[in-house]
Image (cartoon, rainbow, N blue to C red; front, side):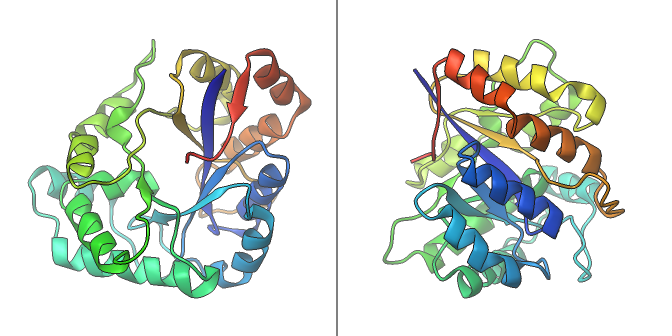
Length: 265
């Protein structure tokens, strides 16, 4: 038996993405999702998510700096460069963490179970120090959230430049978070080009075959086909992921391989 947590990123980015994630939680195909709390859709979606996910899925914060919800956004390239040069403003980022955490709590009624980041920005140098400080400030008397460690990405046979950049930008995140006493994911998977031609089903089978027990694997499903969201560059890949994860084929595969899908903790 191998235990795996599938986490759907980008809840609340759009209603279509969110509805797909809700369906997959109901089907028990995914057992975690991460919320973009700056989204104008979050307040309306939070009650349904709480109802559907209770006892079934971990609900976390998908910390965002790069997707524009009408309030401005940062360039990923600029953030990467500043992080490599140790120039990200820790105090400003801590305040942004607190704002996004508070938006989660305001509409969901409790603190998030876990924290990760859109395009993994939470693990950048500077952003991670702000994250640790924000958690210490908001989780004074309750169990702290678990954290996604992108530097624990499992090695694949066709490792890409994207994977190299991720591991470089998140280097030592796991060790630093563990040293602070946080619960951190030990193995991570799910990186690919996010194009519909990239055979998600085949990649999922490969990841599930090689990943160790207790791996957290991100995914990006959404019931988005035909919705034409011009702000979402991976819309077509979301539809491919959703259709496969919702399918009888996927259910049969995990049963055949003796894989147990479950929340992380």
